[in-house]
Length: 170
Image (cartoon, rainbow, N blue to C red; front, side):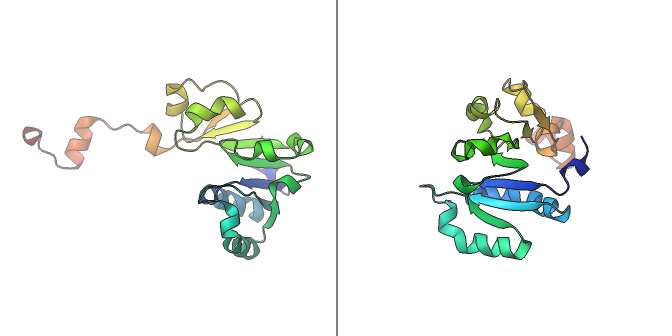
């Protein structure tokens, strides 16, 4: 599959927490630059990061970048739905689930949540191979991006040398 397969599509980001925006915005801007329609689908939660507490900022963000904003339960059509750890998928109207579903993993939350959404997702995005291998979450449609944070494990001697740590002064 080519990146061009994602040109000019309707992409819905399930914003169930404002903290997810830091992952969504770079992706949303990329989709917009490729001619796609982007919707930030929000819902009310009891968390301090509930989107409804920050709607003014979300609307400014949306109008500045030509995104749409909608309630999750009003989403009627999408080509691609992007969620963090499956959050918001259960709220979507059933007819929307025909879209391609991409789930981004979040820190190590996937350890306990992965089994809840993996069978519904077309793609589960991990930052590297190390964590899904460590926690035996390698089945299914995982896409391991690769990240120096998780994939490069420096040798102890290399770190000591780079940081000028004297072995005699441990």
